[in-house]
Image (cartoon, rainbow, N blue to C red):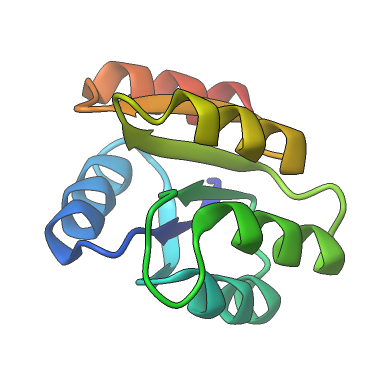
Length: 117
């Protein structure tokens, strides 16, 4: 069972992802509402994979990816972000993200991507 950290500033999105992932055999070990919290939670829980929003207060997803990679250069982060964020997605990939899922997403795509990572 893969352990997952969900990072998104929108509570409803975290809840949606958590339900979806748990129904498909993943264990959600932690959630974070911004990049700073994401780094703290990653350090504490050491999940197998992180779902990462890009646009958040305090610290965005790109900086959070960089911070997580300082803890674990082999971390597996999948960016989940809205249409129109292509330039930010490229920055996230350059920072070390392993994949990208566009919002609004389809459940099958999320499950498939996380299983492949």
